[in-house]
Amino acid sequence: MNDFDDPTATAHEAAGELRRRLGIDGIDVGLVLGSGWATAAEGLGEPIAECPLAELPGFSAPVVAGHGGQARAVRTPAGRIALILTGRTHFYEGRGVAPVVHGVRTVAAAGATRLVLTNGCGGLNPAWTPGTPVLISDHINLTAVSPLRGATFVDLTDAYSHALRTLARGVDPGLDEGVYVQFPGPHYETPAEVRMARTIGGDLVGMSTALETIAAREAGLEVLGISLVTNAAAGLAGEPLSHAEVVAAGQAAVGRLRTLLAGLLEVL
Image 1 (cartoon, rainbow, N blue to C red):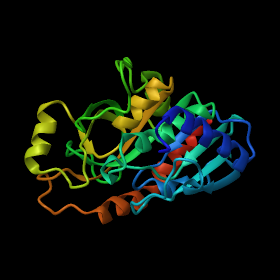
Image 2 (cartoon, rainbow, N blue to C red; image 1 turned 180 degrees about the vertical axis):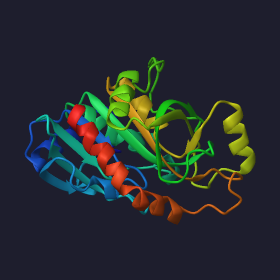
Image 3 (cartoon, one colour; image 1 turned 45 degrees about the horizontal axis):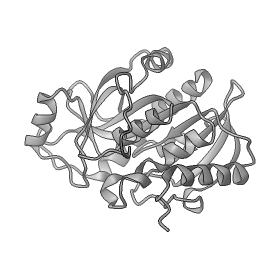
């Protein structure tokens, strides 16, 4: 039987193994660290335990450089338990949509009520130079798929919590916000596709997060999304795009990202 014939059961199985491996009763908040963010995970909270994601039911080792591939439990300054996932499965890996959102569903099954989703992305606003974190206010899903099955109707009016964005700006008042557009990837967008994204209301373009947010809202999680602008989107800077610049932007911005994540763990 496929692990994801019953994705809810697989998530609960993974959550049970996670609690056992990490020696915790449950978690309060989850963080998924995307491209460029993994180096900012060091020193967040009081370490409890960690294990490789690939050793948990339904998970696979990350295939993208810049993803650490660990499930790490820490105790926050407020005494809550946070689970940090330094890696994710992307839709373009061809495994289907259920593995893409498995981490989110596992976080919910383990007891979390809040989720922080991060990513590295292309920016459409020239004021957002590489290394700029931007809050996600909404998204446009251009993957043509959904993680939901059957007649499952989920309200996405407030997909990215206004209250959590307010908390984030309390930590870093300089945070701007914008609309994230998820393309299927793995190729980068063409300049024409970037112009289309801007025309339909997009400010950020990438290959993750939107599908995870849909699953998170179905599971009842309150979502905070944060994009790290790693490059100007195709056609805006006049230079070729590469994943190396994504990783480099994260390394250059690690101080601000770590301060932001540490501050969020104090208030979430």
